[in-house]
Picture 1 (cartoon, rainbow, N blue to C red):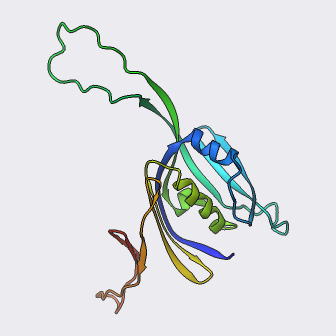
Picture 2 (cartoon, helix red, strand yellow; picture 1 turned 45 degrees about the vertical axis):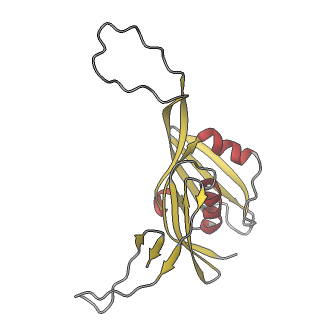
Picture 3 (cartoon, one colour; picture 1 turned 30 degrees about the vertical axis):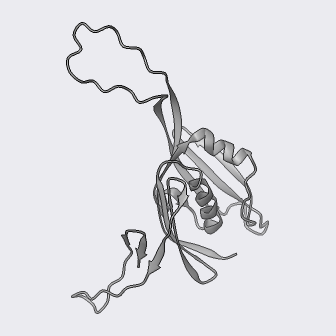
Length: 188
C-alpha cells in the first residue's frame, strides 16, 4: 500500500484511558506497522509506529501521533449555574465529579502526525482513533494508489466528504490554487 497525507486537521479529544484501552485490545494495524510504541513525556503522549519492514533503518524516524494530555473535571450531572443572590441559603450539595485525563490530538499534519516514514499507515491508525472519539473532528486529504480521498469524522461518526478541484482567476496569475473547506467539501 502506498499512500500520502496531503492535508490533515484534527480537533479530537478523548479520554486517555480510552486511547490506552484501544491499543491494549490489539487493534488491526496496517500491515506496514508491526507494533505501536506509546510514550508519555509530562503532558505529551507520543504514539510511534514500529515498522514491519526490517530493511527500514532503525535510525529512520517513523511516523508518530502526538497529543497533549490535559486534565478536565467531569461531572456526573450538569453543575448548577449560579443565579441570583446566595444570601442565607443552605450549603449546596457537592456534585460528584472526577478529574479525567484527555488526549488532545489538535492541530495540522505537522503537529499531530509527524515524520514521513509510514505516515499514511499511521494516518489510518489516527482515523480509527477518531472513530472512538466523542468530541472533535478529523478532516484530511490523502492519496492512495493514485486516488485522492477525503476523510471527515465528526464526534466519532464518518461523514460524507468530497474533493472538488476548482480554478480561480487571480490578478497575479491565470489560476490560483489552495484548499478551502465549504460545508462537507474540500476544495483544492
